[in-house]
Length: 280
Ligand code: OGA
Ligand code: MN
Image (cartoon, rainbow, N blue to C red; front, top):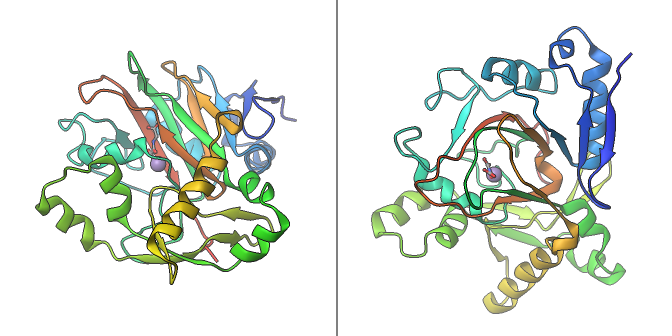
Protein backbone atom coordinates (compact mmCIF):
# COMPACT_ATOMS: atom_id res chain seq x y z
CA UNK A 1 0.00 0.00 0.00
CA UNK A 2 1.17 3.50 -0.75
CA UNK A 3 0.49 6.35 1.63
CA UNK A 4 0.85 9.24 -0.77
CA UNK A 5 -1.10 12.40 -0.21
CA UNK A 6 -1.85 14.35 -3.37
CA UNK A 7 -2.93 17.98 -2.96
CA UNK A 8 -3.83 20.12 -5.96
CA UNK A 9 -1.88 23.37 -6.20
CA UNK A 10 -4.11 25.24 -8.62
CA UNK A 11 -7.33 24.65 -10.60
CA UNK A 12 -5.54 23.66 -13.77
CA UNK A 13 -2.10 22.24 -13.15
CA UNK A 14 0.15 20.92 -10.40
CA UNK A 15 -0.12 18.79 -7.29
CA UNK A 16 2.03 18.50 -4.22
CA UNK A 17 2.95 14.99 -3.12
CA UNK A 18 3.67 14.26 0.51
CA UNK A 19 4.36 11.00 2.27
CA UNK A 20 6.80 9.70 -0.33
CA UNK A 21 9.71 7.60 0.79
CA UNK A 22 11.91 7.49 -2.33
CA UNK A 23 13.66 4.35 -1.05
CA UNK A 24 10.35 2.54 -1.43
CA UNK A 25 10.10 3.30 -5.12
CA UNK A 26 12.65 0.56 -5.83
CA UNK A 27 10.64 -2.43 -4.63
CA UNK A 28 7.16 -0.90 -4.88
CA UNK A 29 5.59 -1.03 -8.36
CA UNK A 30 2.28 0.37 -7.16
CA UNK A 31 4.06 3.52 -6.01
CA UNK A 32 5.60 4.13 -9.45
CA UNK A 33 2.21 3.54 -11.07
CA UNK A 34 0.53 5.96 -8.63
CA UNK A 35 3.09 8.66 -9.42
CA UNK A 36 2.71 8.17 -13.18
CA UNK A 37 -1.07 8.43 -12.83
CA UNK A 38 -0.72 11.59 -10.79
CA UNK A 39 1.69 13.03 -13.36
CA UNK A 40 -0.75 12.39 -16.15
CA UNK A 41 -3.63 13.87 -14.22
CA UNK A 42 -1.92 16.93 -12.72
CA UNK A 43 0.93 17.65 -15.18
CA UNK A 44 3.33 18.75 -12.43
CA UNK A 45 4.29 16.93 -9.23
CA UNK A 46 5.98 18.88 -6.47
CA UNK A 47 7.94 17.16 -3.68
CA UNK A 48 9.11 19.72 -1.15
CA UNK A 49 12.21 18.99 0.89
CA UNK A 50 12.79 15.54 -0.59
CA UNK A 51 16.61 16.00 -0.59
CA UNK A 52 17.24 13.27 -3.14
CA UNK A 53 20.92 12.67 -3.67
CA UNK A 54 21.90 12.62 -7.37
CA UNK A 55 22.19 8.82 -7.64
CA UNK A 56 18.83 8.44 -5.94
CA UNK A 57 17.30 10.96 -8.35
CA UNK A 58 18.40 8.86 -11.33
CA UNK A 59 17.06 5.63 -9.82
CA UNK A 60 13.84 7.37 -8.75
CA UNK A 61 13.27 8.65 -12.31
CA UNK A 62 14.20 5.32 -13.87
CA UNK A 63 11.20 3.82 -12.07
CA UNK A 64 9.02 6.25 -14.05
CA UNK A 65 10.56 5.61 -17.47
CA UNK A 66 13.84 5.38 -19.36
CA UNK A 67 16.30 8.01 -18.15
CA UNK A 68 18.48 9.77 -20.72
CA UNK A 69 22.02 8.87 -19.68
CA UNK A 70 23.65 12.26 -20.27
CA UNK A 71 27.21 12.83 -19.09
CA UNK A 72 29.58 15.77 -19.07
CA UNK A 73 28.27 18.21 -16.48
CA UNK A 74 28.02 16.02 -13.39
CA UNK A 75 29.84 12.90 -12.14
CA UNK A 76 26.60 10.90 -11.92
CA UNK A 77 25.47 9.65 -15.37
CA UNK A 78 21.93 10.78 -16.08
CA UNK A 79 22.32 14.07 -14.19
CA UNK A 80 22.60 17.34 -16.11
CA UNK A 81 23.49 20.52 -14.28
CA UNK A 82 21.22 23.48 -15.04
CA UNK A 83 23.25 26.55 -14.17
CA UNK A 84 24.45 29.72 -15.87
CA UNK A 85 27.92 29.11 -14.40
CA UNK A 86 30.17 28.11 -17.31
CA UNK A 87 32.66 26.46 -14.97
CA UNK A 88 29.96 23.92 -14.07
CA UNK A 89 28.37 23.56 -17.52
CA UNK A 90 30.32 24.49 -20.65
CA UNK A 91 27.05 25.03 -22.53
CA UNK A 92 25.61 27.33 -19.87
CA UNK A 93 25.03 30.01 -22.55
CA UNK A 94 22.26 27.95 -24.12
CA UNK A 95 20.46 27.78 -20.80
CA UNK A 96 19.41 31.39 -21.10
CA UNK A 97 16.89 29.87 -23.50
CA UNK A 98 15.13 28.38 -20.47
CA UNK A 99 13.85 31.91 -19.64
CA UNK A 100 11.41 31.71 -22.56
CA UNK A 101 8.29 29.49 -22.44
CA UNK A 102 9.10 26.21 -24.18
CA UNK A 103 8.56 22.48 -24.50
CA UNK A 104 11.81 20.48 -24.21
CA UNK A 105 12.87 18.56 -27.30
CA UNK A 106 10.87 20.17 -30.14
CA UNK A 107 14.07 20.67 -32.16
CA UNK A 108 16.10 17.49 -31.61
CA UNK A 109 19.44 16.84 -33.28
CA UNK A 110 17.92 13.91 -35.20
CA UNK A 111 14.34 12.78 -34.95
CA UNK A 112 13.98 11.86 -31.28
CA UNK A 113 10.53 12.24 -29.71
CA UNK A 114 10.18 15.02 -27.11
CA UNK A 115 11.02 13.93 -23.59
CA UNK A 116 8.21 12.37 -21.64
CA UNK A 117 9.04 14.10 -18.39
CA UNK A 118 11.62 16.39 -16.87
CA UNK A 119 12.74 16.30 -13.23
CA UNK A 120 14.59 19.12 -11.46
CA UNK A 121 16.00 19.15 -7.94
CA UNK A 122 17.33 22.30 -6.30
CA UNK A 123 20.93 22.22 -5.09
CA UNK A 124 21.21 26.00 -4.78
CA UNK A 125 18.58 28.66 -5.33
CA UNK A 126 18.70 32.19 -6.70
CA UNK A 127 18.50 35.17 -4.37
CA UNK A 128 16.07 36.79 -6.79
CA UNK A 129 14.15 35.19 -9.66
CA UNK A 130 14.73 31.60 -10.69
CA UNK A 131 11.21 30.33 -10.01
CA UNK A 132 10.06 27.67 -12.47
CA UNK A 133 6.72 28.39 -14.14
CA UNK A 134 4.57 25.75 -15.79
CA UNK A 135 1.33 25.89 -17.79
CA UNK A 136 -0.75 23.11 -19.30
CA UNK A 137 -0.99 22.92 -23.08
CA UNK A 138 -3.75 20.28 -22.76
CA UNK A 139 -5.83 22.87 -20.91
CA UNK A 140 -4.84 25.50 -23.50
CA UNK A 141 -6.24 23.27 -26.24
CA UNK A 142 -9.41 22.60 -24.25
CA UNK A 143 -10.04 26.33 -23.88
CA UNK A 144 -9.99 26.98 -27.66
CA UNK A 145 -13.33 27.71 -29.28
CA UNK A 146 -14.92 24.90 -31.29
CA UNK A 147 -14.11 26.81 -34.45
CA UNK A 148 -10.43 27.23 -33.49
CA UNK A 149 -10.16 23.53 -32.69
CA UNK A 150 -11.23 22.74 -36.25
CA UNK A 151 -9.02 25.41 -37.88
CA UNK A 152 -5.85 24.48 -35.99
CA UNK A 153 -6.23 20.72 -36.03
CA UNK A 154 -3.56 19.99 -38.65
CA UNK A 155 -1.87 23.36 -39.07
CA UNK A 156 1.85 22.66 -39.73
CA UNK A 157 4.34 24.73 -37.74
CA UNK A 158 8.10 24.92 -38.27
CA UNK A 159 10.19 24.76 -35.09
CA UNK A 160 13.86 25.78 -34.99
CA UNK A 161 16.57 25.89 -32.37
CA UNK A 162 17.47 29.31 -33.74
CA UNK A 163 13.99 30.66 -32.96
CA UNK A 164 14.27 29.67 -29.31
CA UNK A 165 17.83 30.90 -28.84
CA UNK A 166 17.33 34.19 -30.66
CA UNK A 167 14.68 35.32 -28.19
CA UNK A 168 17.00 34.69 -25.26
CA UNK A 169 19.96 36.28 -26.99
CA UNK A 170 18.89 38.79 -29.65
CA UNK A 171 22.39 40.31 -29.94
CA UNK A 172 24.18 37.00 -30.50
CA UNK A 173 27.29 37.18 -32.70
CA UNK A 174 27.09 35.54 -36.15
CA UNK A 175 29.21 32.52 -35.12
CA UNK A 176 26.59 31.64 -32.50
CA UNK A 177 23.75 32.05 -34.96
CA UNK A 178 25.63 29.78 -37.37
CA UNK A 179 25.86 27.13 -34.63
CA UNK A 180 22.13 27.39 -33.89
CA UNK A 181 21.37 26.83 -37.56
CA UNK A 182 23.19 23.48 -37.57
CA UNK A 183 20.19 21.89 -35.85
CA UNK A 184 17.66 20.98 -38.55
CA UNK A 185 14.21 22.59 -38.53
CA UNK A 186 11.31 20.33 -37.56
CA UNK A 187 7.69 20.53 -38.66
CA UNK A 188 5.02 19.68 -36.07
CA UNK A 189 1.24 20.03 -36.19
CA UNK A 190 -0.06 22.83 -33.96
CA UNK A 191 -2.32 20.31 -32.23
CA UNK A 192 -0.74 17.13 -30.89
CA UNK A 193 -3.19 14.22 -30.70
CA UNK A 194 -1.62 11.89 -28.18
CA UNK A 195 -1.90 8.12 -28.27
CA UNK A 196 -4.47 8.21 -25.49
CA UNK A 197 -6.61 10.65 -27.51
CA UNK A 198 -5.85 13.75 -25.42
CA UNK A 199 -4.92 16.84 -27.39
CA UNK A 200 -2.45 19.59 -26.58
CA UNK A 201 -0.99 22.64 -28.31
CA UNK A 202 2.62 22.54 -29.51
CA UNK A 203 3.69 26.13 -28.86
CA UNK A 204 6.52 28.06 -27.27
CA UNK A 205 9.96 29.46 -28.02
CA UNK A 206 10.91 27.01 -30.76
CA UNK A 207 7.99 27.97 -33.05
CA UNK A 208 9.35 29.76 -36.10
CA UNK A 209 6.29 30.06 -38.35
CA UNK A 210 3.12 28.42 -39.60
CA UNK A 211 3.78 26.86 -43.00
CA UNK A 212 2.21 28.88 -45.82
CA UNK A 213 0.86 31.67 -43.62
CA UNK A 214 1.77 35.35 -43.93
CA UNK A 215 4.72 35.83 -41.50
CA UNK A 216 3.06 38.62 -39.49
CA UNK A 217 -0.18 36.70 -39.17
CA UNK A 218 1.69 33.52 -38.27
CA UNK A 219 3.69 35.22 -35.48
CA UNK A 220 0.56 36.90 -34.14
CA UNK A 221 -1.31 33.58 -34.01
CA UNK A 222 1.52 31.71 -32.27
CA UNK A 223 2.10 34.54 -29.80
CA UNK A 224 -1.61 34.81 -29.04
CA UNK A 225 -1.94 31.08 -28.35
CA UNK A 226 1.08 31.14 -26.05
CA UNK A 227 -0.16 34.24 -24.20
CA UNK A 228 -3.56 32.63 -23.67
CA UNK A 229 -1.97 29.39 -22.43
CA UNK A 230 0.29 31.16 -19.96
CA UNK A 231 -2.04 33.70 -18.34
CA UNK A 232 -0.97 33.95 -14.70
CA UNK A 233 -4.18 32.31 -13.42
CA UNK A 234 -3.33 29.15 -15.41
CA UNK A 235 0.32 28.98 -14.32
CA UNK A 236 1.89 27.04 -11.47
CA UNK A 237 4.97 28.93 -10.26
CA UNK A 238 7.39 26.98 -8.11
CA UNK A 239 9.41 29.00 -5.62
CA UNK A 240 12.35 26.78 -4.89
CA UNK A 241 13.92 25.76 -1.61
CA UNK A 242 17.04 23.62 -1.53
CA UNK A 243 16.02 19.95 -1.57
CA UNK A 244 12.79 20.41 -3.55
CA UNK A 245 12.12 18.15 -6.52
CA UNK A 246 9.64 18.93 -9.28
CA UNK A 247 8.65 16.60 -12.13
CA UNK A 248 6.52 17.64 -15.09
CA UNK A 249 4.90 16.01 -18.08
CA UNK A 250 6.92 17.69 -20.80
CA UNK A 251 4.51 16.64 -23.56
CA UNK A 252 1.55 18.58 -22.23
CA UNK A 253 3.14 21.64 -20.64
CA UNK A 254 5.17 24.69 -21.48
CA UNK A 255 7.65 25.82 -18.86
CA UNK A 256 10.25 28.50 -18.22
CA UNK A 257 12.59 29.78 -15.54
CA UNK A 258 12.03 33.34 -14.31
CA UNK A 259 15.22 35.17 -15.20
CA UNK A 260 18.05 35.07 -12.67
CA UNK A 261 21.48 36.72 -12.91
CA UNK A 262 24.35 35.03 -14.75
CA UNK A 263 26.41 35.00 -11.54
CA UNK A 264 23.59 33.51 -9.46
CA UNK A 265 24.46 30.41 -7.41
CA UNK A 266 21.23 28.77 -8.70
CA UNK A 267 21.91 25.15 -9.58
CA UNK A 268 19.34 22.52 -10.50
CA UNK A 269 20.05 18.89 -11.19
CA UNK A 270 18.01 17.70 -14.13
CA UNK A 271 17.03 14.19 -15.13
CA UNK A 272 15.16 13.58 -18.32
CA UNK A 273 12.78 10.70 -18.94
CA UNK A 274 12.85 9.82 -22.62
CA UNK A 275 9.74 10.11 -24.75
CA UNK A 276 8.41 7.32 -26.93
CA UNK A 277 5.73 9.30 -28.75
CA UNK A 278 6.39 11.65 -31.66
CA UNK A 279 4.31 14.80 -32.07
CA UNK A 280 1.54 13.97 -34.51
C1 OGA B 1 15.18 22.90 -18.39
C2 OGA B 1 14.43 24.08 -17.97
C3 OGA B 1 13.81 25.48 -16.11
C4 OGA B 1 14.42 25.96 -14.83
O1 OGA B 1 16.11 22.50 -17.68
O2 OGA B 1 14.83 22.33 -19.46
O3 OGA B 1 13.67 24.61 -18.74
O4 OGA B 1 13.66 26.50 -14.02
N1 OGA B 1 14.64 24.51 -16.73
O5 OGA B 1 15.63 25.83 -14.66
MN1 MN C 1 13.26 23.21 -20.44
